[in-house]
Length: 532
Ligand code: ADP
Ligand code: MG
Ligand code: MG
Image (cartoon, rainbow, N blue to C red):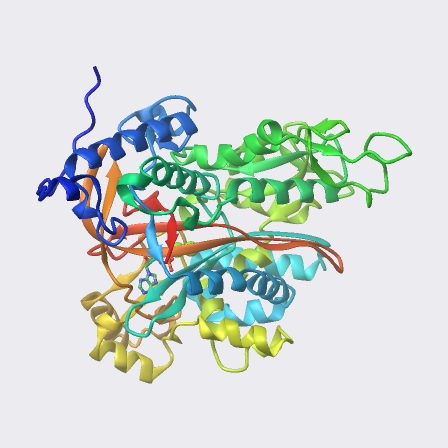
């Protein structure tokens, strides 16, 4: 007999009366009050569910788990129960998704704005500088991206004092967890439904989360726009990736779980040169299924095996690439040699659809975020006044380090600010007294140039709450805060916007004493939300 897992740190809650033993009034507001017997069952069932449904990551204790699929799997770090979140703020975040999509697209088309905004960063940040070089080159050769694909994730925190939903950042490259986050919502719906008598909550208040299907569907639609039935979707990956199952969920959805088919019209079946009648339908309908093939390649492999044909077609390892989906290439570590940069340039020069293009990538930088938050800048890119007001309402305070007043305030009150370099992937920000130390040092040394590598941001303070975090089979009782990510997709072919929509969500919950929020980096767990 397998015994149920241990509930780790923290004492087992006292059981007061028989009634309270099986019925907790509001377990979502204080899951620490759930009695230990029920808790052990919940944890056990959550672990079984995760294993059976592919809510898994590579286990860092197993060396090959980042390179060989099926070796060393462990359940993803999760919150046992969903996080209570106000419905009004949830709706607000969803409503912002298509507006940010449009903003990214508009900004990406303004090459001069991107170059100017990042010109001072370029001088001190070698990584951003290389990205800008590729971007300049594309401007020089007049490269046009007619088909533009964005798979974004806009992250928010709910500030306790002001009760405002404020944006942390907008990710335009390599947004993780669209593959796994929908599973966390399913897990929580399943647990809440199974234990509804005990928990006394309604599982339907967890919003449906279709993130994996939605992202896969847009990749499929982009592949269709490319209109070459033998072409592939190429996922650009890191050589070692413990979060590979999150990525495989999307590829698998493209090829096997959700085979798409071509609608059949009276003229027959098959892909034709003109495709306006092509629509995606589930395979059970009449028609033939298309399994969209995907390949996984590292930047080094792309450099070694890739070439562009005279018409710009990208061919990698003998396969024509329709869509390039980046799950690597967002951090300096991804480019240890010139080979990786050559691969990035090769892809950018090609006619393959890039998710993201270099312009979309740069639009997601923190410096651009800060520039867009300045007065009258959004107006350059968006026409609709209501949309502009909605975006501005979610902008936190953002400042450049040449704003002497902001720097002065941050030195006086470092705890109220976060200092951010132009980096992605978590673990790079500066908090608390280190903000002060850094700013004072930069001032003393007169390092105006070095200062351009950073932005200052108002620190957001979400309310902390008691939660149950499950990591490596052990349940921890902790105080935590949460960050809501809204996935969105945008696909456009010239003037036609084919898709612009919200694509599910990611809730990340982290121990409140931790500054950073990365799940892969080990600071946070995957969560879902319970509308309150
Ligand atoms: P990255 O691109 O590396 O994810 P983020 O801007 O998202 O950079 O910062 C990483 C983490 O730091 C966030 O997930 C969040 O937990 C925390 N963080 C970032 N900005 C703020 C802020 N203004 N207030 C509070 N926490 C923040
Ligand atoms: Mg980011
Ligand atoms: Mg982030």
